[in-house]
Length: 168
Ligand code: GDP
Ligand code: MG
Image (cartoon, rainbow, N blue to C red):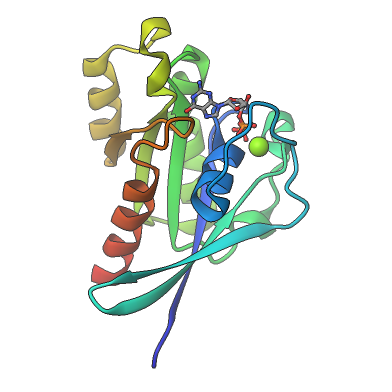
């Protein structure tokens, strides 16, 4: 049986929850003090889409994003991208455009979903719902809202990306 393997890169400012998202999806756990590096390049999870086995390899940045030092090897061969920002960090929202360009420069146009993480902290929200939609539309991406902490929409994000990749 044919197995599809997809490399997914997770980009966005430090602290938005990228490592937590990967850990949540691949290991089913969440911690407040997540280590900056997971010690490996990626974690993986296998899912089934329309009877097809799909192996998702989720690549983590090990904190390099804070030094703008993400290497080409990180992006190389990526099939899909999660562009993440935090509900409580306006700068991370304003950085979406530049993250999109970085991915585009290395990978060309690949299926990309913008994820607004930490919606469990809506009482501290610093990004209006309309402006998030506007930016997503301007960047040509779907917007999904998630809470890695409460496990809201995390699986849905990766399922949607994989489905897009299979359809292409
Ligand atoms: P990264 O730098 O983008 O990899 O972010 P991390 O995964 O290291 O997460 C940064 C901090 O945000 C950690 O303390 C996480 O526990 C926390 N965090 C991640 N996702 C959520 C979420 O959905 N809700 C809340 N309240 N905290 C989160
Ligand atoms: Mg991290």
